[in-house]
Image (cartoon, rainbow, N blue to C red):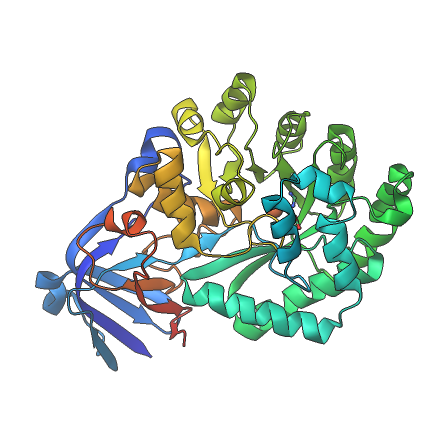
Length: 414
Ligand code: NIG
Ligand code: FE
């Protein structure tokens, strides 16, 4: 079916280049004023100025939608989430209000271990239902491609269950979904004095079973004090890479312990979090070709210093933005709020934040040839906005719903 959308006030992020954006280029966001967009089935096949429309449209569109002055931008590409979990953790939210730190809550058996216990007591069917509800909400908020991690199982069965749920979400929605194995998210209680033993379970039991069912695209480790060291991270990355899983890592959230050097040495696709960076690490990321993924809602929720976005961009880093949706440090997948926070708290320009949440987010999932911009041949993943006066209005109006409708793979989400 061919769909023509006419009278689009601004068609944002129109480009035929498909490289991630770094440094100064991150602020370039080409758009067309008074535009049309032509879609065939699930693919963008043409766009241009309204005044060229008669000359260029050769197909007879079955479906014509008048945008009537509303604007269009590509869907968000949320490249870091933990969307599969069994239950929310608002009790810990109260603990935090009462003064406990994230590390103290984790040390008391809260945090990730709390989520793991609940997940292991929840059926695959129930997890799938809960995750599907969350994914639907994310879609309605404009997310058209997403990465989802395991890491709340921490047992062979639990990790397989999570990864199967992720693959089922992919099949059921047809959406671009990347799956990451994060067995090294925390050290389970049974292994609390035997971390090496748990790493052997990850390498010898979990990875072969996951590879056999082809359940993961990437390997991840929470490289952090009290969790996994840089050496552990290297060992786990190397084991994952033997099964074709590229690293995408949690590094420098609370401490700087060598995760960045390890990730770069292992050709990570992305290094994520980056709240705690020294100058040398900023320079390393600036020279690196992988993606530096910032998760500002996690820093906001944990009341931490925001990631040094400006210093990273100025150093030449390829910055992406993601929601980190999870029950402990970022309980939501609202990418509009992520970009708003990035502008308000990290001094990113609206163009930079939107590019980081679309083009660079797609690059962080290695799907930039399929999505992330309005480009011929890419998926028809679009956000139709409410009438808005400008691009900057999007992060500026952080608490308003600026979305009118969302289309994913050519279908309007309802
Ligand atoms: O990315 N920091 C590690 N993992 C998650 C939080 C997990 C949790 O608290 O449940 C994160 O912030
Ligand atoms: Fe995370």
